Amino acid sequence: MTTTRPERWTAFARRWFGDDVIAFHRDHGRAERVAWADGLVHQDVYDRPEPDAPVIVMVHGVMGYGRMLLPVVRGLWRRGCVVVVPDVPGCGLSATRHDKGKRPILDQVAGVEAVALAAAERWPGRPLVLSGVSLGAPTAFAAALRVPAVRALALWNLFDPSDPDVLRSAGRFGAASGALLKAVRPLVRAVPGLPMPAMIGMALEHLNDTPGFLRSLMDDPLISRTGTLGFMQSLQLDLPPRLRWAEWDRPILVLQPAADRMIPPAATERAFAALTGAAEPKRLVLLDGVPHFPAEVAPYERAAEEVAAFLAEAGLLTR
Image (tube, rainbow, N blue to C red; front, side, top):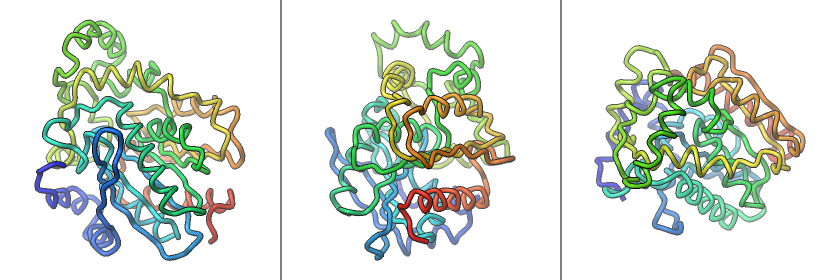
């Protein structure tokens, strides 16, 4: 596991979300490790005593780690859910000095799948829900297709990383981002581990334009500031074939920030429209005025309420 001084992560959460989310984590969170095919995944577990409480496995986004999601984790826990928050392989407290930022996307999917299977075994009979934020959304979707025990999906964004609109918005080079990734494929095949600083490859300023937000994010010791060209290529080549939208046959909720400059609402709407086999309830909710990565607690509270209402409608949560 990483040897980074882990408590320094609190600076980001404290600045934007307040001391009370740190207190919630310390009072209710339990740090654990789960085995996957190539190592161990760190996860934080926020358990509840109710025997019928649904279990939500929540997946963070690119570069990130699970504790960045504490405001929504707390909101879901308060509404009666067990929440399991892994750091995917190569990220956060799951990373080692050798693989931080370097794991291809299918390793991350495999890590989430292992966490979901472990949760199903640990809490038998309880409803299991997969959730994901940003890149964590398609990652969770791909994993859920491989875990029959998953009863529903609740996602923040839903998209194909190779969607031209996503490449245009999330890529550093705008409309040219897709063409550049194709052009460097021979180089990636030769040197897949070639470092790629996140600020060079991605338009991170589109996460949130609140003054100071991006700087404090980049100062966080647990984020993966540098990835690899191989990881970027794996997003374009390896993940899309796993996003078989029409095969999803269970309930699904998708929350889409309406002011998202990273993942355009149109990209999420296209993916949602392709969910032709989904069971009811099937919901797409636009969050007016909300950016990709909110810097205040209120949007996360709304997200928690939307998820809880969805789970209640699906018969998976007693309120």
